[in-house]
Image 1 (cartoon, helix red, strand yellow):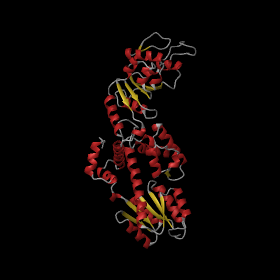
Image 2 (cartoon, helix red, strand yellow):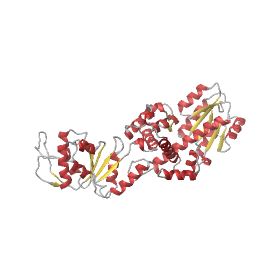
Image 3 (tube, one colour):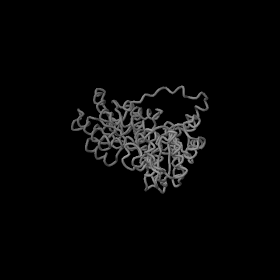
Image 4 (cartoon, helix red, strand yellow):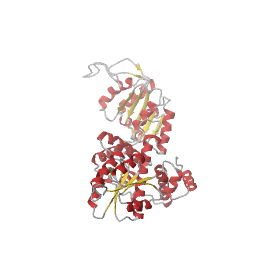
Length: 452
């Protein structure tokens, strides 16, 4: 969104003050309204990004009843519009009440042009950021992998790998920390393959006791053990012609690893208590958060099984290394939980956005999802605050490298990535945000190998 697309609606019944406010914003598209009906008509017709609202409107110019009523209607009609309430010096209680109802900010008379312009420009900036993130969530950041929301170059590259690998039957090992979305990638491999209309069977090797895991995978015949009152297909059989996803394969016991290796070599299963070999055509995808190579050295994982499983290895970066994704995902989760919880929260405060960007997210996407859900439930205003997120950020001073060139390069790369993300990859706008020329930005994008 370029500067000329900014629309400001000034709701003020005093013609003199209305003119003064218009003069403050001569470089914006400015609309005015002197009463509630005119204001609502302008809102429906033009959908301004920012509104300045004087609470004292006719027929109650000395009170605030009409102003608060209009505030509620604006929030209902355009929940993402930023409303700045303008009050007198003696009306601080009204300002606090308006913020609690969902207004973005307040400003006290008398009007100082520079200060008010700063407040309004900041509101435009926040609205623009939220709009861009929402656009990324709903379209521009879409990938071939269903439900995967990202603008991170590493993740987009991973999606291209998924597209290339999916049509094959290569056994794939997905590595990544807990909560990074390993099952999402596994499902993407299935959905983009010729097996997409067949079963996708997932089993978590860490969630099932060792004694039961073998029967869950390979099935059993009637009478195979106490309680086996009938014949049961295992997950491998059930996934025939489809995909079997073995989550947390690093937690599979050694005795079962040997049996899995035999299946991978022979492609037949033998149920517990049975003697018949059953051929199965299945694609195997595995995942783990553990270091398999270290486990091999310690004798906890079979090396020959590892080579069978790792025909293709994909590594998912942690959320803290996925530049811009925390904000995009936060907006996606906000929209989802708004619907689930019956809320109409329009976005995040500046402090909340800074907190989301700076927090390292040790629990990755799963932790982010839980924090946004809690914030949607607990938020008392129309914007989620840093307090609603209930996140404590420890000092990361010890993690900063001492080499000044490394510090500068890391800071430049991060700033450029943020500017590109916040501007929707608009190079001219990103250059303005960074305070540099477009040729300089192109040079730096090339230097840091950023994906635009």
